[in-house]
Length: 155
Image 1 (tube, rainbow, N blue to C red):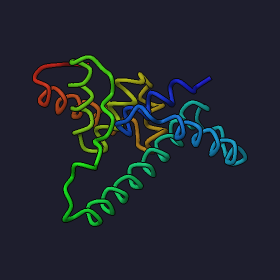
Image 2 (cartoon, rainbow, N blue to C red; image 1 turned 180 degrees about the vertical axis):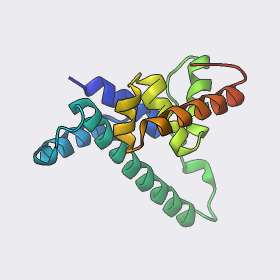
Image 3 (spheres, one colour; image 1 turned 45 degrees about the vertical axis):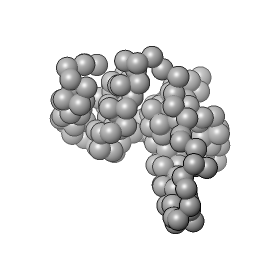
Image 4 (cartoon, rainbow, N blue to C red; image 1 turned 90 degrees about the horizontal axis):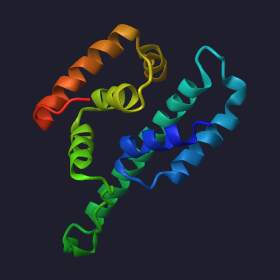
């Protein structure tokens, strides 16, 4: 039911369109942790929380891997390193995507959840473990930062 929502969230969060394994990991963790689901939030917000944690884990893992590669190939040419796959988006979407990726983590989280996935303030607050006022303020600041970065583009 929420497969596409989780997939799109992870594409924006991770910065790669190759997130099928991560989507699967979200649902595996959800199944394993179903007994701990307290129904204080909707299943959708619970799954987004899990997806966010999976995304954080993946980013940390890829940073460690990149660091190892840099150390390993410190004196070698970088010809052999392949750049991350660039999403097949039109130019406007690529600009927006790049700008979102350049935001600090809190801004990026709230922009993806509120602006792209169109979750409510309360759902976003639940996923991020913030209060609703923090979500509103951070989203407002994030949009200003995005507009500055892109030059007037707005969500």
